[in-house]
Image (cartoon, rainbow, N blue to C red; front, side, top):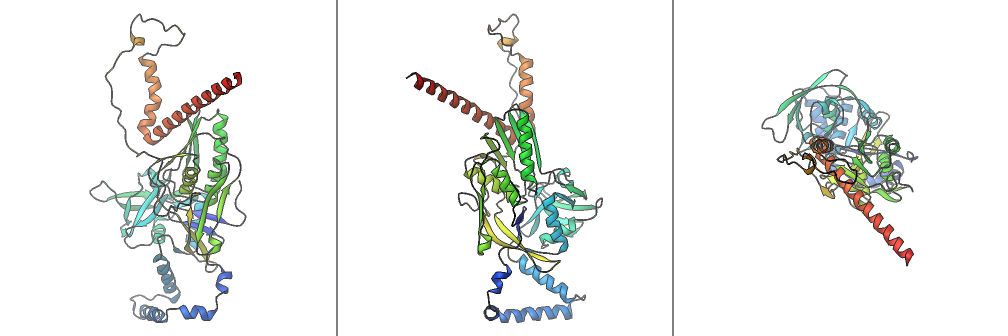
Amino acid sequence: MSTPKALTRFLGAATLTILPLLGLCESETQNKSTADNAARLPLEDLRSFAKVFEQIRQGYIEEVDDRTLLEYAIKGMLQGLDPHSSYLDRRSFDDLQANTTGEFAGLGIEVGIENDRITVVTPMDDTPASRAGLKAGDVILRLSGKSTKGVSLDEAVEWMRGPKGTSVTLTIARKGHKAPFDITLKRDTVRVRSVRSRILDEGYGYVRISQFQLDTGTDVAEALIKLQDKGKLKGLIIDLRNNPGGVLQSSVEVADAFLEEGLVVYTEGRSEAASLSYSAEPGDLTEGTPLVVLINAGSASAAEIVAGALQDHRRAVIMGTGSFGKGSVQTVIPINSERAIKLTTALYYTPNGRSIQAQGITPDIIVERVKVTRLEEAAHPTEADLARHLDNGNGGADRNAEARARTQKAFDNWLDRDNQIFEALNLLKGLNLYAHRDRGLRARIARAEERL
């Protein structure tokens, strides 16, 4: 699995960006005559624009140069289209590229616009935002005292960026809290480690993907090798919760790691260049190991591509809650050497033709993230606890209260810390149990047929 030769895509909770240009390329615009374009220009509206422009130049309380006013006009045009189209100055474009490498200075928050307010899509793992307890769905009312109402996404991100070690105070409105409250965060270098893995129980692995960076596909493959080196995998959990997206090619590579063949994702737009498809190459790195993919409302874009592909191919059980529903494609189009626009040019679709836009991925099994309280049963002695009890006769160890407590402790830890992982692990064990029984039944049938 390698990076694409012709293009690289960047996804995020609020964006899926394509480089090089798709959609509005020069070859298309050159085919249109100047006369044809002029005939469709709304001349009266352009006159109105010119009048407003001149009034601002002459009458605004502070002098604003023409270049700045034109930039504001461009920003306004793009902001009026959809939440993901925007104007990129040099800094914004540099930030976009930095996100794909996984290292940048800031707070570590993926944000979007909802009801004209800056809203947290997800805090990134191991960042100032996650350590401070910010949650998906938190509404940022003020940034260091400045109201965010009507502020563009780019402006809000710019306010949150700053030199390492400096602080910014966020005024947060959170569901379930009667009044807004302040959280002060110290800016830091955000290094996003996109893949973590470990063994949960004997034969059962766990891979956490926090976002899709340029090397995430390779990192997942390496994580699978390390897990398999510890013993044959009987089941695997892929955790995509609060994953805001990232590089499209990496999401294709991750889905490809678990598929033998078939379509992973395709896009459709007005431009022929915006309609593309990506398919898996032969070879499942896990050789059919049962999979559970965890998602939630913070799983967006690239995370939804992976979940949708594995769900459509019936390769994994999708568990958790509904995903974010970001299924649009943005194209980065340079205006000059320092500036570009990010324009929505297409929608992406799962292998079965589902558009995730504003709908998201619906899990096969709904499991809410909750705090589970285990009911304590009255202490009942068992035969093994009785004095002078008889041996079982088969050489097995007695299962007394102490042994039961040790066995239960591992499960209680997961139940207390993360009930969704607990449920996913139990499901994998059930799938493995019945698969083992099915293999045994087929073997007995085969032996019977041989005797016949």
